[in-house]
Image (cartoon, rainbow, N blue to C red; front, side, top):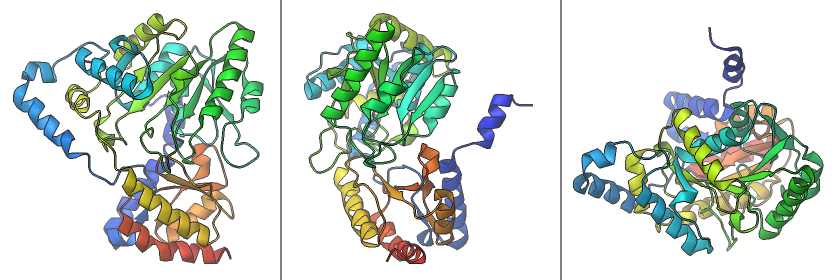
Length: 396
């Protein structure tokens, strides 16, 4: 028999993954071209050619024992050196290898940070809507996720007053996802300054640091000249979790890192704790070959223009049909307001072979998420189905 905790997790297993599997099954029955799967944030563009070239070169030229063997739990020293240098060049920071730990994606990074920080019953705050797995990541270590509702303006920007009111003596961290999944909103420099001011105030009030965990797999995906602020520049007690899943289209390779700046309270102890967490959670170290490969590709650009084309087309078409949504500034998602319960709306969309994820999966009912990291041709093919759906609700 499995544990009681796992029984609950199995029952509430990812709606996104379940929908993705259902979409594949339907595609096998009626043809892939007749299914419009917007469920999973799985990049449709290929990795930069240099990724393949780097892997081949590494395999051909380096000692197999070095490529495939163990290394420090933090990762290869030279890889961390190169990433630190790249960050310093881009963001005017002053990191070195000791500030970085290579991780099994951003998810692995968040889990080791939470393992290092929270005791049973400690609280971690996040703004709704949010990536639904945060619930599980915090629960893994018997913490409590405090979900702040969307602000009253409906623009999904963080509400500093709601944050101030939610912080208690048990608050250990705030998780922000910037650019945001599922809304595509980018928190501005002013947003981050406002958040930082509240965290500083409350840390002083309770006499203990409150850490800001910045989840950044979509950092490179921003549009219309929007800048994504680098959070360690605005708040010392920041931990940055990054992934190459979206920037280099490598989601299945599970490669990323976390950054803990020297300015963070107890930085050395925190890095040490994250290193131990990396080992005892079973990650041990990030995938060795992929560490070496991404270090060769730090200046490569992701295909922002492909996602931007999809973004503009879907936003124009859906708003033209009468749907309501905030225009995304980053990531590759649209968060669309539903004219009825989001679960019922998603079910009705599925009848038209449209797979749209209900907003309740992200802690925000009354919306669906559309992942537009898909082939442009699929978007065009799906538009008649969206029009039929809009017509059923009298939107157009």
